[in-house]
Image (cartoon, rainbow, N blue to C red; front, side, top):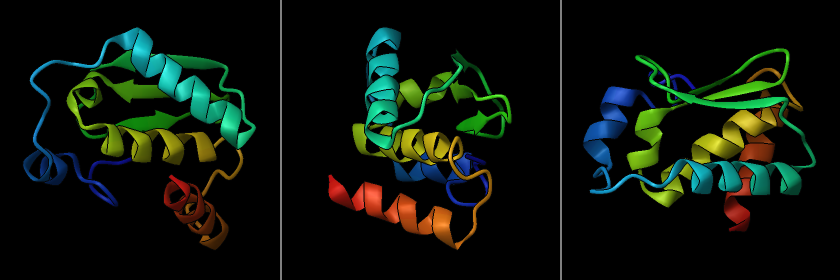
Length: 109
């Protein structure tokens, strides 16, 4: 998820108050895997590393990469980013179907 198009990193960093303590990496991975199961997808790899311009990305080979700064964001925002990237394993673009599924899955919870 580019930090500029839907959730620009600079904009979201000022809109969201970062958490004092980061969510542990193993808890974050568990969140990703739980959502993957709900969405019926299987990421090949989950990476967590510093990223300058994006909160996350999804490769065509099924690798998800999340920015370490995401571990300091509230659960609701993490969920949006996680679901967004996992849906790319089903739909590689941001077309109408992608947006409809994203809205549907985020509205469920």
